[in-house]
Image (cartoon, rainbow, N blue to C red):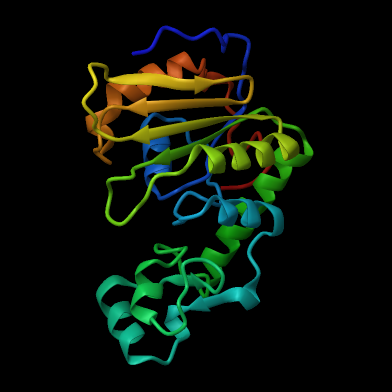
Length: 242
């Protein structure tokens, strides 16, 4: 644990805690801590580039840029659908038109089929919530949890973190929490590597993507961030039905 930090979080009262990727682990961790009060657009999304996050938050999801594997007439995709289920591929994110195997396994929505009306309505509501947070200037803690040792994932550079932070603070009343989970030869469980008015960057000295392996550290970090669960808005507070 790091105690050498001059930034004071005690006056911050968040109304929303939201995942902005990079995989579903951020959402899983927030849900396990009872900090997910309603669904967000990035909960089950796979992102490899902060520019994709910025693009989606700016323009949303356009149907004409999607490939729904349920309707793709391709032998490779049909076999993958049978084995893993339907996915939604975006033509501008993690997509190689000449490598459908790669495109399927790196689909930006690996757990949702936007060809299904219920999934589509779910994401429409998620976009509405994000717009509400922006339009009503609701104080939000945006969370980006990084597992650079998981699968083919890579780290996120400080330059990209700064780029994403600049976008967030230009559009939302927010703070940006980045947690990198990576085992290193250090004698601490977690440490705040950088913090200013808008960003807190924390290293958790554990590469596991299982919440149970990081539960103590995550609870300490959220306490450090002064998150008060009782102050978080719910579905009903957002005036959106579940």
